[in-house]
Length: 333
Image (cartoon, rainbow, N blue to C red; front, side):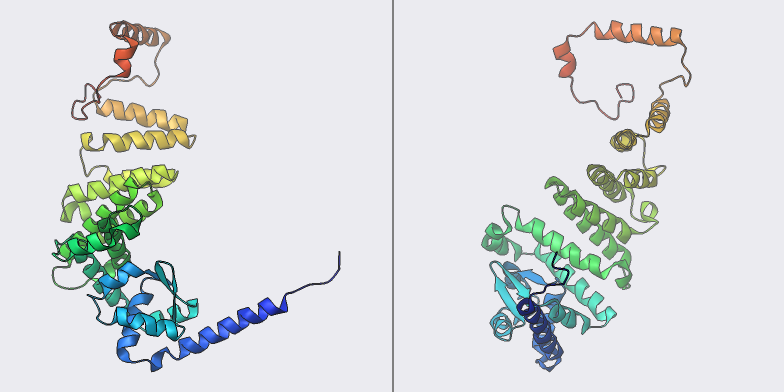
């Protein structure tokens, strides 16, 4: 209605000033002592913010982190916000992170991840129990183990499988795949299926395309199975099919009956009813049930009468409380 633009000059000046100050601080990071630069590089690997209890853990990785905290706050590099410490500006975190080459960043992510993994008692670290007692309350009811496993995987996944080229890399990658499986399972139990799918998919990536041949089937099975269930919970039905197809031919039918059930449910939920019926019939035939593709009215009536005769032997209450079927018993299935 005014036929002109309005703006808040005070707010604009504040934003511009903030960016200018941040840029100045960021440009001066290289003048800090090497130890201080190293601490900032470590913190930058966690993004813009870091939990304060994590400082006590990282002190065992790099001495001087805790003592540097107040100095960085005074210099305007970091600020405290409740139980977390935050880089005062994205530019500062970015400058600290990009002061390392790609290879250096990958190496540091990997070192931090391996350290956190050992502290999470995945590697049975004797120092873990004390940390768990000290910091359990901070993680809002979640166990300290769960948090450290997730943090360890975040760092290792940032490094990526390509960063591992040492002797015995197969065993190392398998270990990292197991860590991601653990983090994915814990995320699933907390109904955080987006995080769960991330960890399961990263675990699969560490094992590579030949995972079924090189590492045995159980680890691959659990990672793919977890990815199927998490994808279904997220409504990502194409991913359900994609991960399920990778299991075909690599594990037995009885080991994947639950996965097949989820695939059928995802086809139904996505409106692909004909394909769902076709796959269901295919599955039943694999279980030695002869299902006609084009049943006649007579065959349908006979099947219905047979079903009615069997069902009449049981009460409704009995049918509703039937025990869970054993997947190894294909006749029951």
